[in-house]
Length: 223
Image (cartoon, rainbow, N blue to C red):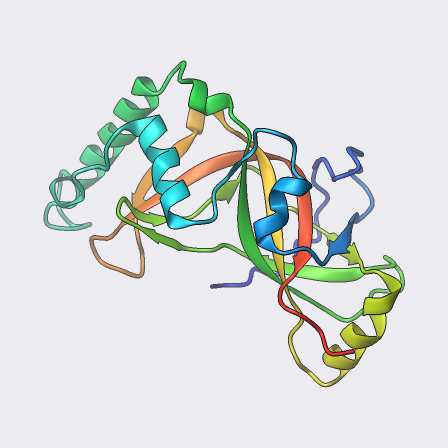
């Protein structure tokens, strides 16, 4: 898992309180519920795309079957027809899923994150975030938000402040799950590509217009 540097540019993003701010940092509460209880806080009907089986079922509902990755890859990136085959794969699948009801169903996915030292000016703990790479029978699935949540800050419950500060002061990680929920981008709902780390390995990127962000504490903190 790679953590991306915290973005310091303003973005338009709907917070859990359904408020928008293009100038201030995005603030949200630090929740202590488990991933298994996400249903209790997300809008009804949201499809949780965390477990492998759920992700594979989601892809099957949209695109039927996995691509023939060896045929598309051919002899690799230097194959003269490689780029055209990949372009055609994306174009054909975009056209085939037009009008699918699965395109409009709310979905939620998870990235990983870490808290940094308290920012007194922003009155919150900055969150650095990075994508999860999900291994599936379709290939590697990496959910891609249309706009990465920038300037994200969390405000924990008062009982968590002490343990968080002590852990950070000891140069230990405070890890979180960053849950993003929204709907697929109709015109670019899924992008098919190849992994840059694993030669010939398919990479699938569902592109989501994020409408809600929740931050969950990963594990337990010692009090």
